[in-house]
Every structure is written in structure tokens, then in C-alpha cells.
Image (cartoon, rainbow, N blue to C red):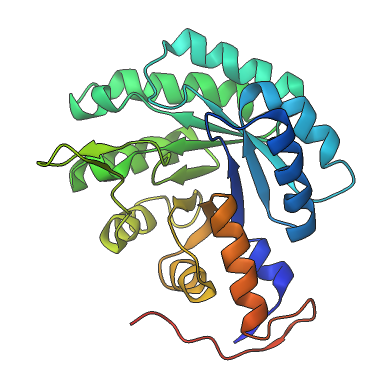
Length: 252
């Protein structure tokens, strides 16, 4: 297949949301984002001005979160957060929906909240709605896709990366998004009108290609380690800054 380091990096959103990240850590990772030339960085709301300044002169977009990490804020508070984010210079906003309202079938609440935040973000940027799809049934995923398409959001996203579940042994784990969930999102998001993004623990270029080409994912969110591993893997495969044909085996 034909690809380049720039193409692979343009498929990545660099998540800088770890709760113990310091300002010094943030500065280091923003420089790394510049070097990698990723599509976007997702930062905490207070970090937006720092990210905008650090990435000035690049094509790296600044994304932030609203209602993070569990979506439990009131709609009015989410609207306030979104407005403040756009005024601070964010290009994209990721909205954590109230998953409890989805599970309870309160679709009017869910729709009204998404619409209220989109009205703030859409004139100046892109709103992306996070589903936490591993908690949802197929029918709930389909209905959320229908609502998001109707409202006209820019993108839908599988998960936040923070929706941990407790297993029978008492340990906490984060379930990876599976292909059927992405297929549902792909098939129910308005004939490509709404982009699909995925938060995944991946480390290989072939996984990026699989999700992008076979499941219609436009961007994959990874952490610091994931981005470094993927770009390192690309170089090991012989991918360079120049677009060229490279043999990349896809996952079976």
C-alpha cells in the first residue's frame, strides 16, 4: 500500500488527559505532537491556551473535553464549558454524554444536550460525541447514531478511555472496542456525514490501517506510549516522509 509518516500521523489523535500530567509533562508531549505531526492533541480545558500557543504554525488541531470523564455534569454546565473552550481557541470539543440517560432511554434529554452543546461549538469548530459504546446495546448505539446525525455533529467516538468496569475478581479493566460496534456506527451515521473515531490501545501501523480502511475509522485516539510505538513501528516498516509503496500485513 502507498503511505507515508505524515499519512499515518494524520490518523492519530494524541490524548494528553492523564490526571497527574504536570505542565512540564504537557510541554514535552506538545513538542512530541509537533514532531510527529499528528492530526490533533486532546488536552484538559485549562491547557487549551498553552496547547494553542505551542502548536502555532502547525496543522495540529487542539481538542478538549466537556463533561469529562463521566458525562455527569448538567447540560448548562456542559454548554458553559463548551463556550469557554471555543473562546480559549479550541478547534474541537469532545462531549461526554450522560450514559445513564442513554441506558434509561431518556432520549429527549440526550438529544437536547447534544444539540445545546453543538449550537455552541459548530459555528467555530467540530463537536465529537463520545458514546462509551462498550456499555451500550446495539439498539442504543443505533439510536445515538441517529440522534447525532440528525443534530449534525462532526463526529462520533467509541469511548473516552476512562470508562473502566470491575470484573468478578474486583480488578478494574478497560474493554477494547470491538469491530461489531464500529460496524454499527459506520452503518448508521448518515452515509458518511458523521465521521467515526475510536479510542484504542494499539501499537502497530497494521492496526491503524485495519480500523481506517475496513471499518471506516477516520481517526484513532492513542496515548503518549501508543503514538511513539506506532510511529516507531512505521519507521521499522520502511515508511518515510515520502509517499511510497510499503508492504504492511493486516491483522488476521
